[in-house]
Length: 326
Image 1 (cartoon, one colour):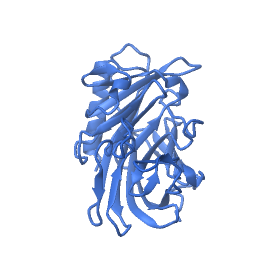
Image 2: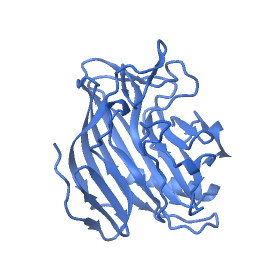
Image 3: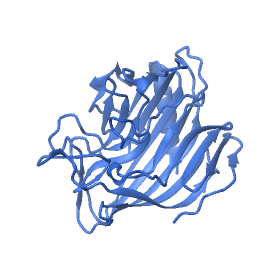
C-alpha cells in the first residue's frame, strides 16, 4: 500500500513545476497549469489489463494531446507502458494474438499493480518520481517486479517554424523489469506471432480523434503510415485540435543504451493517431531471472507544429535531458 507523497502542493521555483498527490494519481503542473496526470491506482476492468497511465497530457498552452478508453480500443490509456505478449500473459489489454488462436479472449489479462513511491526528487532540472510495481497474471501469480522512474522537465525550445507557441516539456521514462515468475519469459508482439506490421508493445501513446491524418517526421524526412516499423533515434507526430484549431507535436526519443537501439516504432496516422516504442516488434526478447531489462525514453509534448530544424532541436534537447538524468 502506498502513502501519498504529499497532501499539499510542492513546487520547484526555478522550473516552475509542482505536483499534487490525491492518493490515486499524481498531477503535475507548470506555472500553475495542470499538464500531466499519472494515475497509479486505476479502477479499470481486468480485461483492460489495469496499469498506471498518463492522462490527460496537455501542452504548456493548454491543448490535450491524449485520449483514454476510446470506444474502438478501450484498453488504450493515454500514454502507458503496455506489453501484449509476455510469455502466456497479456499486459496490454483486450484480446491476445497468437499463431494458434489469432485474436482471441484467452483469460490471460494481467495487471501492473502499484506498490509504492520509493521517492520523489525535486532537486534537479524537474520532478522525478520513483515507483515499485508488481505485474501479476489474471490469476494473481507474480510475473515481473518493475522499478520505474519518470521525470517532468521543461525544455529549451527554439521555435523555427513560424508558429506562435508556448514551448515544450518532456516526460523522461525508465523501466527496469525483473522476472520473478520462476520461468524464462519471451516478450514479443502480434508480429512475432505472425501478424504483419502489428508489433505494438512498449511505451505507447494514443492521440485525440482530431489527430487522425496527422504527420510523422524523423531526421530523414516526413510522412504518414510509412513510418510503421521504421527505426530511428527519434520520431515526432504533429496533429491538429478541434475547437482551438491549433497544432501540437509529440516526439518520442529513445535512449541509445536501450537493448536493440534503435528499435522499431509503432506508428499510425490514417486509422487513428498513435505512436509507440516497439522493442519487441519483430523479434522476441528473453527476460530471464537475474537478468533485468531496462528501457529509457523521453516523450516531448510541444505546442505547435515542427519543421525539420525545430524537430531536431527538440529531439536533441530531450536526448540531452536523458543523458543528464541520473
